[in-house]
Length: 444
Ligand SMILES: [Zn+2]
Picture (cartoon, rainbow, N blue to C red):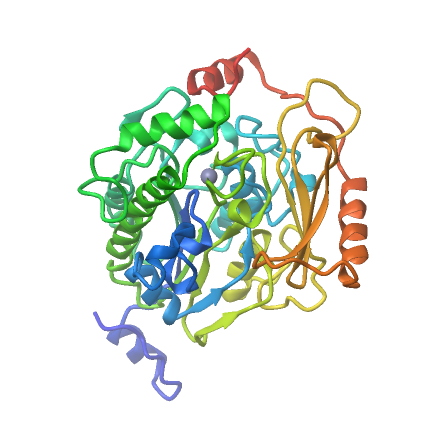
């Protein structure tokens, strides 16, 4: 049956007989690239994952093509360098202090409206396919999804995972269960760029035979500290890029699915970055730092009638929900209601690495970094680490001592810190705690 073209002059009865109505909204695909730094995506034009020798080499041809046809947000920032909190900012439109998720394993409370709940109310069939147990059901981010696929084939000590190929297969299978009339909201979570870096097939950028040696190196560095040599850093970065290239192929496979007749909105983002030998104290992994290597992430938006372009203003991931809702005409406030299309006057971007402390008072961030971004300038401090505040442009260039943005940035950060929530302990019943222990999220 052909789609309705709804020529106004047609008699209604004839129009009904001649066609079926398209879904009232385009589909929405929200694709999360876990642990993916912006510089790993070739469209960003940077040294891939910091590998100067690969500058100009294409790592991600499919995401590059998507970026060329859509809006690329050159300076998008995750509000937190951990999976659950970062995704929760996306799913609620709120920043870390409004959420009080201290780390992975502290669930999103039931009082928050989620993007999936809103889209379901807007008539969408909502489906999610997970790549890791970091977002498993007990974390509360499944609310609003009609289907939530968390079948993981890879069992590790602290989490369970599915490969991007499995996530893509299941996402495609889920799409084939769609109703004929409702638009689809699909959340797909590709976890592969998270360590360990063991991309299927022969490595293109890394040492093809040494994934376990690299895992040993990065794990030892995280737990015991280390001073990696340049050759080790290059191998780690290469193996990481192999994972990003693999995910790029799988995203392409998902996007090859035909769109509905009403079209499709696709938004791809990284939930946080990854240290790849970028700084000496914590050379690998993520969770404690908010520097750009940990928080500068890819963000690409493609939508019907949206002109391609590049946005050079820094943006935060909490703007994703309100933006998607605005694109389908749902203009009711959502979260803090910061919208990528209405950035003028936005309050800036707080970034914070939180973790459980042992006692109050205050928010549980005493031993990690936090920061604030306004315009394209950033301040980072960690007073409890005896780390003095340091200022920089988001591209890493130093912000001169006399730059008038320095005091304004620090004042914004302090204002945001003054609005920290109270100290939070994990409020879990016995069953939830046992479930989280099984997932490796809580130790005691
Ligand atoms: Zn993550």
